[in-house]
Every structure is written in structure tokens, then in C-alpha cells.
Image 1 (cartoon, rainbow, N blue to C red):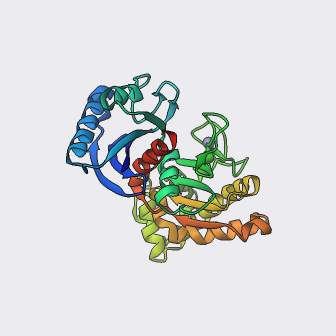
Image 2 (image 1 turned 90 degrees about the horizontal axis):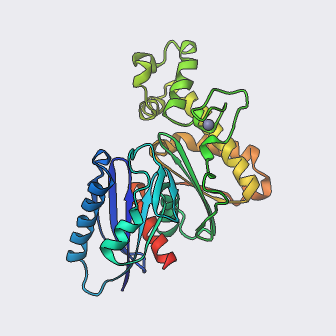
Length: 314
Ligand SMILES: [Zn+2]
């Protein structure tokens, strides 16, 4: 049985798993990254966790390759990180080289957002789709476009879906431009929308919080209880996301959209404004085929996508 090892290294945790060619997750584990101790310390602990799984593993398993996911801007050819804000000091350390030396199997590397998309395509909410776009709504916004199970990318810096401009006269974004999608749909985007509208809603239950303490889950909880301001925030964020997705759908014709990340947990609140924006803005002939779903694999999508990358690269 051909088996592939998937490793998804994040700023907090490393998700590790073994997936067979027949899409069976045979084993999985999670360890802390502790990035401040440096790459060598973390990678040594990852390697021993993998060795432990291999020791306990099935006798007929034939380990054919390994995929490694990392955040930030990567030098895939040389197997290292160029820039990753949540793994400070890890730049230029030979990560794929480390694992190749340890395990003597082919090792492949990819950005974690792209791997999450591949994971959903292979084993999650994107199964069966020829083309797919995954948007990850977290502290920032990630996006990955797949065509026939392959990542579409013309430039390593491309795919910045969160910085698609929604309002050219809009609020300043962290990227230095104005009115990007992230100024609507992110923790800071939600806080900004609350700050700008709070004075119009003196009866809102969100008045009981210090502004800095208001998070998307808090706004979602109050929206579900019927708070008008909280519902308006989700309507506005959903509309902005819908406009960005409409532009993407009209440009590429992608019809399967998967929404993941922490903010997508409130999908029941986002779905309606997103769909009504799509209905309004996507060409009717394309809109009829559009399917938009919540991601299914959560944190596990990354290691599954890493295993898929290895399975498709060896
Ligand atoms: Zn921006």
C-alpha cells in the first residue's frame, strides 16, 4: 500500500498525518511548534513524532513521499521560507533538505493555504469538482484557485484574494492601499465596522464590550440572538465577500467555492448576504452552476493536502 506523509507547520501547532493512496487517513498527531526555539528544534521534534507513527504503522505500508506545508512566502525550489511573520527567524533554513536527509524519501513543499485547498479538494468539501476556489477567513484572508487538482499560480506573490479592492475610497488596509476585502472581513475589519456604526445603535448589546475585546465570534453570537447591529455587520461583510467572489467567478469561471477559517464558523450568518451579492453580480449563465460550501476538514485540511501534494508529485 502506497502511503504519503503530510506535515502542516503553523505558528502554533504542527499537524502530521499518514494518508494512503486510497484516501485513507491511517494515523495523525499534533505537536506544538514553539517557533521561538528555532527551526532545528521544531523539525527534530516533528521528525521524532513521524518516526513514532512509522514505528506503530501498518506493516504493508510503503512510504513513497512527504509533503510539507508552511505559512508565508516560500522559496519552493530551495525548500525554505523567505518570509513568515509567525515563524520569525526561520528564514533560509533548509526545511525540505532536513526531512529528505532524515527520511530518505522525496519531500515537497507548498504554502499552507494552497495545501488546505488541495486537502479539501481531495478529501473534503471540494471532492468531485473540476475547478475550485478556497477562501480562508482568519486573522487575514487566504485564497487558492485550483484547476483539475492543480494550484493555478502565475507569480509566487499572486493569490492575494484578501487584498482585492472592494471600495477604492475605502478604509486604509495593512498593505498600504484602500478598501481591500480584509478591511471588511477580518477581525480588524469587523471591529472597524462596529466602531463606525456603534453610535447609531445605542441599544445594541455590543455596547457592553470594550471595542478591542469584540471579536467575530462575539459579534456572531449577538447576531444569532437578534442584535440588529451585529446582523448588519455580517450583512456588510458578507456583501463585500460576495463582491470579491463575483469578480473572481466572472473572471475565471470557477464554480465551486469553499469557505474555511475561523470566521467561516459563522457561515449561517454570511451565507445569505454572500449569495445575494453573487446573484446580483455574477453573470447569470455562470451563477446557475455556482456551489458555495463551508470547508469540511478544519485544521486537518493542511496535512491532507500535503499528503496529496506528495502523492501527485512522486
Ligand atoms: Zn490590502
